[in-house]
Structure formats: C-alpha cells, structure tokens
Length: 178
Image (tube, rainbow, N blue to C red; front, side, top):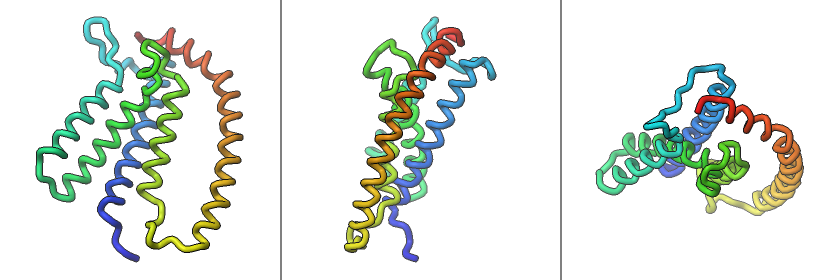
C-alpha cells in the first residue's frame, strides 16, 4: 500500500473535522432549544452571537497563518482540522446568510453542508486520476445512476420530513433560550 498523499491526508482531516463539528453543533443546538442542557449561547448586549461568527473568525485566522507563516506538515494538519471546524460552524448557518433573520433550521444550510461534504469526500477519498481504468468508469456510471435515484427519493422524503419537522423545530427555537 502506497503512503497517503499529503494533500489527500489534509482533505481527510478537513472532512472529518467538518462532519464531526456539524453533527456536534446541530446536536448541541437541539439540546439547548429543548432545554435538555444549559444555554451555552454567547449574548453580547442582548444580541445572540451565532456560531457562524466563530467560524468566520477561525477561517480568517487559518487564512492568515497559511499565508504568512512557514509551516511543517504537523502544523498544516492542525490548520486542516481548524479549517474543517470553522467551515462547519460557518456553513451550518448558511441559510441565515441568504435570509438574514431567518430560522436556524433552513434547508439551505443543510444542502450547503451536503455539497461541501461531498466535495471534501471526493477530494479525500476518490481514486487518483492516473489509476482509473475502464471498469472504474463503468462502476462510476452505475453508481451515478444509483446515487441519482437515491437522491430523488431522499429529496422526496426530506421534503416530507421538512414539512413535518420544521414547524416543530421553529416552535422549539422560538420557545428556547434567546
């Protein structure tokens, strides 16, 4: 087995950090809104500071470090982890970028996270181009059809779930901590 390409390793670290942070942030918000855990939200002068702001500051810091500091591989790996965390914090509230003042539970946020995870997953785990053979394309085409079919079914079920769950989540958000 050949050693992992350093860029693929960084993409895998980013992917894992992004996925775990997204899951953690959604879980914490649900638990706080359901009053199953204390209000951990930061409030400054009566304003709720959303976690996308933490992500923006972390993204800015990682960009500055990557631009201006010479880094070894361990430091680059740490930056990849922080990058994944900050991207998840930021894109978890992507719907709020589009509709300022809207609900946290907007479908656009979830869709943005799926697109980013898919892209990171391809960068991290897809086979290298020079190793692709004819049978890879045949399997890829079959998988594309299967995934497209699955996506159509998933979109229908998510739409149904969205119709059922969103009103309950928005009500929980309204009655939860400010």
